[in-house]
Length: 306
Image 1: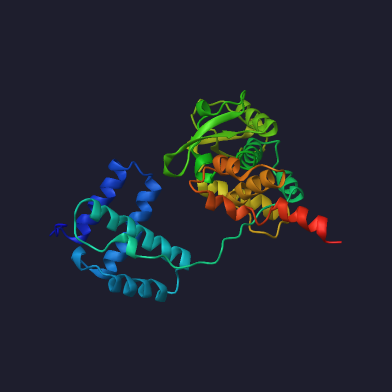
Image 2: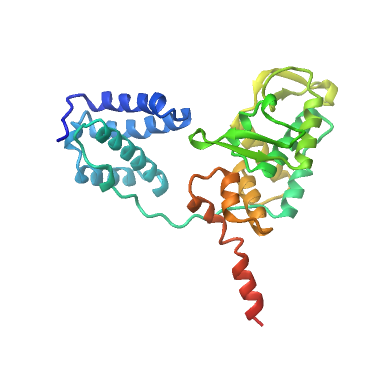
């Protein structure tokens, strides 16, 4: 028999977040998301006794989220996923409440992905002005994103000691802080080396923020400070060069990651290997690419369609 806790909802949410941080060692981003989603539930439900949370409560909350008008079905599901994680925590600690397994997520349309063709990639990669250190950094960033399939947060957190340019491989920790090995192309490794050779600092980050000097040459570029380049700055520079190249698609660092995976599959890589290189916990996530690159269906079409 589960015991009924007299602790307030706000106190239990705080305890849950502490458990996620210390007990499960979850990432700061996950903690921030859980806090945001559960705070919205608390704001709506008030300091409800958790033993009173029912399927009817959840249904009314979902209607509330949907009627806000600003949340996609996917985002609404993120709120419910956080709530289910909280309820699982309560159950594990013998605190009476609704069983998380009773809550189902809304169905959403199958995901599709945007990716770039080789011709589009080459157009974008020609845009940075490598006569200055910022342009050299920017092409290094985009080549690295495409070469490795890194998430933008993983790329922004790279340190020089971490990246082996001789072996052209290194370890990163992705979602859930799971380690994986990623590989650099010869071209990407060479460009990173060229960029680092222009640096006169000994700061740890691979990619730094730079400020422009009066003339704009490499010699006239100075370090703004030992600031690591942010994910937002990386997203902005990818968007800037795609627009300069005349690409109509909305290009983000994640589109370069999609392009990395798509290129591998088109050239015959097996989906399990691609899953490992992307750091996907589930093969289902990787399968979003297969409708773009189904070699078997192409072979059937070429064989039987005359």
